[in-house]
Length: 189
Image (cartoon, rainbow, N blue to C red):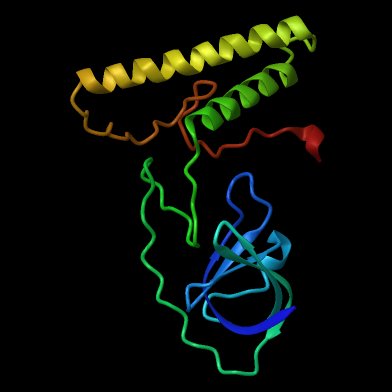
């Protein structure tokens, strides 16, 4: 088992289908660590680690077995870039990696939510045939809705946002709004 003192340059969550996250040190070396242990490391932190090294396809794989904060002073963490916006205009989460939601996942989330709401609302019976029909309708509705939205966006220029109007007071029971007159009721005494 080997030991090293590393300064964390980057932390990476496990890639899809992988079991371990990655710590990249300031020398560019990669250290692999279990996801539940990844939270104990901080970017710019200095750690004494013990690891097992092995070779795979001409690469050195370093699997961390244990670590502790080093007694050496920590280097200043690298400055963080301003959050970039994602494809839908929302700010991307800060951190080392952000994977946008795939179209397949978006469809799956929509269909799941629509069928769940239908079952809970009593509009879909809880049996195989009814659920299969509901899934088919939800998938078609999702695809047709987005196709119509894209076609509409391409044909029409952007409209200005609608003007908001102040709500009008409601006239309840023929009385003027804010009529604070309370009728006398002797049984309330």
